[in-house]
Image (cartoon, rainbow, N blue to C red):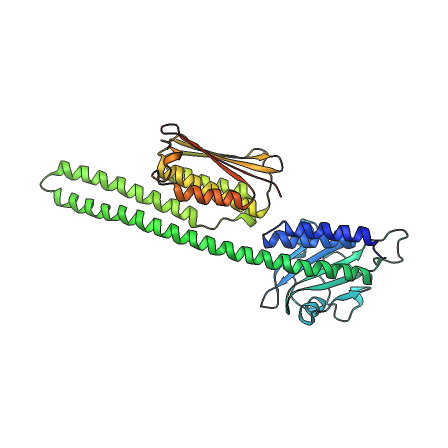
Length: 385
């Protein structure tokens, strides 16, 4: 079946716009697969990104339920027709994949497929992925037997256009993630310096105070007792610094657990580690695109770090609520507050700049409200996908 030029162009345009909106590799892969399946009116679609060991680093499907996908089992290996597309970098259009001599079967839970169309996704000479579609839906009379209606040369040409733009979108997403990894490495380096300075000072003071206590034990037990109390306080402060650093350094399981669960887990750790009461609420919250979730998590971590390290609060409350298609993060403490006009002297300048950059990077905005003796409220609003 041929596509009408007008409707096909509009569908391709919609698909390309959808791909260009995402920066995370996983989101780009999902968008490509969903766009390809809808564009060619197929029952199933998949996209595999090969690894260097004969398997797939990532494999995204559309048209298969989560239950089916779990039942299918491990990701496929690069064999049969999948390997042919990856290694020969040529399209494959088959009337019935099951009758091809390269077909090697599939797991028992795998859906039955017949007509098949596959195209490599290439960045120059490198094959960076492959698109697979199966079971083209029929319009009008159903075909005889259990086969689909068959993909056409027009379908192949349309998918080829999509694959070329998918290569650009996927390459851009990879570059973005590499850039973000460099940023994370820089942040960890900054944190390591802060941790070294803070904990080293605490441990140095701890050692001197312990030495003083030891020298006073025999001749002035009362003063020795006071010095030992100071040792206990310094040890507790050093432990707090270390716990806070561990929370920041531990990788967030956003991909597996989602933003709400990851935030709740980290806030529970902070609540146990600090004397301040730290709470979290997320009524009616739903998932956001990966870039937004990453930004919200990092801003929440920075705001919590500032509150617990500088504000001396009795309580810190974190809320994450829906705001239209997006979300609103609020981190509020009842600590000593500060004058935003003298933020540099308050020791938070770099933190606020970092948070504003993160919010702006996903099209959001950050608002900081504070005054001496009246606590601090940080709000971050982010749009939806």
